[in-house]
Length: 71
Image 1: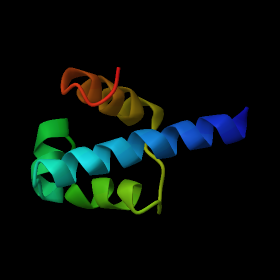
Image 2: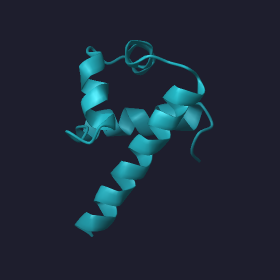
Image 3: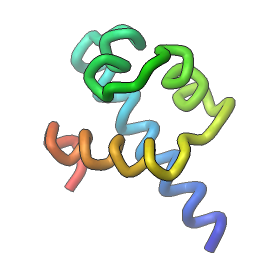
Image 4: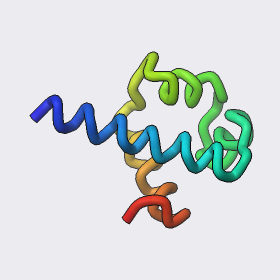
C-alpha cells in the first residue's frame, strides 16, 4: 500500500511540473498560484527532495483538478 501511495504522489507531482512547464511558469509564479509561501518548497517537491505534507497535497490535487490537468 505504501508503494502505491508513493507512486501516486510522484504522479501528482509530475503532473504539477508538466503544468508548470506547459504554462511557462517559474517556481515563483506556480508558488503564487498554489498560495504557498516559498518557491523553494515547490522546487524540493518537484526534484524529489521532499514530499508535500498531506494538506499541501490535497490543495495540489484540487488545483490540478480545477485546471483540468487531472480528473
